[in-house]
Image (tube, rainbow, N blue to C red; front, side, top):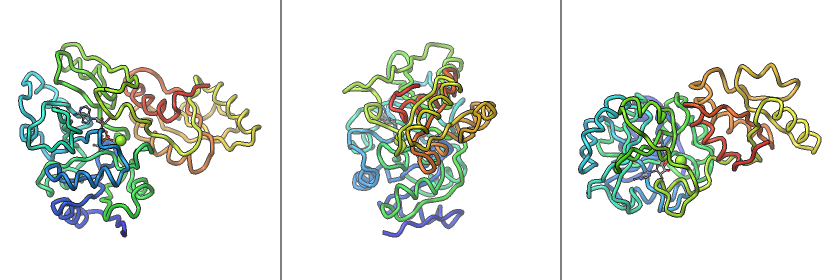
Length: 330
Ligand code: TXA
Ligand code: MG
């Protein structure tokens, strides 16, 4: 199958036609690119799992063009959470809510809840509106690979597997949405993202729990039990810049071609080490992290990423980097 990369109105119109006809296309969002299927069509949803090579027990998020449509996929949404919709939607927040029966088991992996998200990217909104149905979509990478933040990244994984990639430029947030389960007593962050637990707690004026992220057979976000975001080469997290440089020198002596990923503020402290600049400030680092990992695995065979911090959005970025490194630290 030929995989086209198109942009603009033509791409949106063709993409929506393919989705309505039961096909699968890649589309941009502000977080990462997604692989779209009509959520009401179980065969189309199965085709998404096949294109991605993803186990069927890991549910997909349903994407809507407008927050007014949330009631079409959920039953019994707790009105006290309207404040979250008003504050963070459209945007990088997914709410896990009780599902309506019209959402097939293929989307939710048989759970009685559904993840729902209203993206803010304008090309995405136009595409979802043109589809006219809820769109089930995972990130548009092969299962366990680094998530895509550009049409080029999608092409590398999905070439020959899908007919169309809608090119909407680079994703401005850069990591996947925050997944928040609001079906229990206390809201639980199942996956951290750009909307942080602190931001959610301040809107709700109450407690928000963080899921430990431990690997559990019955993890509440089934995706958490799978290996994720892995570059094709070795990857480690360095406690600080000095440890990063030390590791670099050691690996180089061992015949490796390493590269250091670090904040813009630290590029002057690396001596002659090769580096990829993640930019300045948490939002920029978040936007650049996946493209840096994509680039890193192409130009190096050993990626060293400095610890980017444990607060706010930096902590969400480190959630992805730690997975990329398989928990390895130097
Ligand atoms: O930003 C994003 O969320 C991107 C873009 C494309 O919207 N999508 C994305 O989808 O990251 P995916 O499939 O790669 O990750 C969805 C995560 C998985 O960890 C999955 O287990 C969890 O959300 N999830 C989905 N539905 C759920 C549900 N009903 N209950 C608990 N976790 C759920
Ligand atoms: Mg994913």
